[in-house]
Image 1 (spheres, helix red, strand yellow):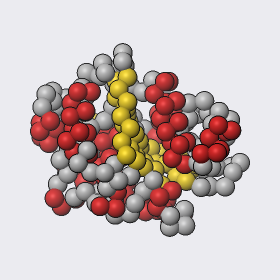
Image 2 (spheres, one colour):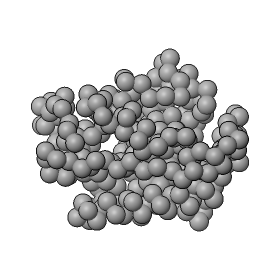
Image 3 (cartoon, helix red, strand yellow):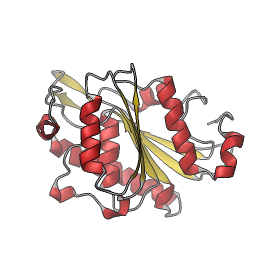
Amino acid sequence: MIPKDAPHKETLIYLHGVGGSAQIMLDHLFTNYTTMFARNSTKVVLLTAPTANVTVSGKAMTSWFDIITFKVEKEFDLNTAFNLTDIMRNSLRIKQAMHDEIKILGGDSTKLFIGGFSQGCFMSLYSGLTFNKTIGGILGSSGYLVSIPESDRLNGANANIPLYLSHGKNDTTIYYELAETIYRDRLSPLAHKITKVYEDGVGHAITETMKVRERQWFFDQTQPKKEQAEDIFLPILY
């Protein structure tokens, strides 16, 4: 989706969860301007994961990496619950899209944002934090993060970028307590400006309230303060 009514100033790459697609993200998050993350100057890039066997489901489906089990009770179990080879391979594809968008933005990597839901949240964190250029920020919902292999280590270029992380307190796929432990142990030692929101009564999903809050955060990162009160509720057309 390319801005039609305003100059292109920033780009958001957004990634779906397992079994999802770019079309599902378009229908669910980016068609109703009242809950859309993007400004009218934002280009939105929606990527679809390859179709591959997902062990936990016993069938082939769109997935950024194989999920071996959802029965994760301790933080370290995440490193054996998912296929790290898939993660690293598909992260390279996402990073290529990031490089491509930075070129379109005239080389200003701080105008690029990445985010996602569930697996997409994981991949946005993994790809963004190991990217070799400083980006504008990362936003995600219902996600998590495994230990990053030494061969694909955290990059200092993104050691203090803003992060927005939301999670439902009733999530039984990735328990929010587990997500909180992961984020505290793996992100807090860095200097990120982290906004964490845990929603009561919400499962493994993005609610309308969560959309609005994420949208507000994105607006705060991408426009001058004096503009926020004036145009935050205006229609965004593509």
